[in-house]
Length: 111
Image 1 (spheres, rainbow, N blue to C red):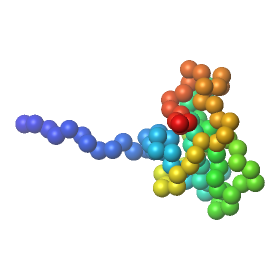
Image 2: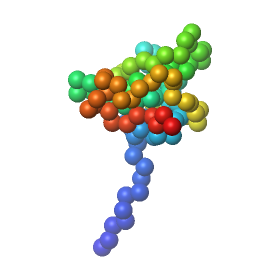
Image 3: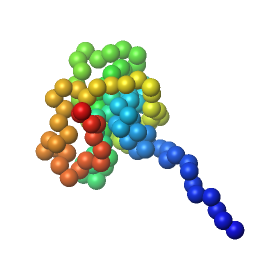
């Protein structure tokens, strides 16, 4: 009796965010009871917990006053879905920065 290999795509928050970073696609999440569109730049650990640094592209359908990178703990993000909305890395984002040393799981390719 032979079994076929499992070819299912991984699901859940981490694989979704990893795919979004690799493909430079925004994600939509529920954060503090708001629907937020995020451009995830990096997934890393801090104090043993997963975090992403991302740019909020929209909050409840409205753009923010300024584009800046924010830190979001993964446990605070709900209903994570990948979108087809592409993004570019924000100017000044440095995945080699001291904050991320030895903690980074994946960062957006700046090329």
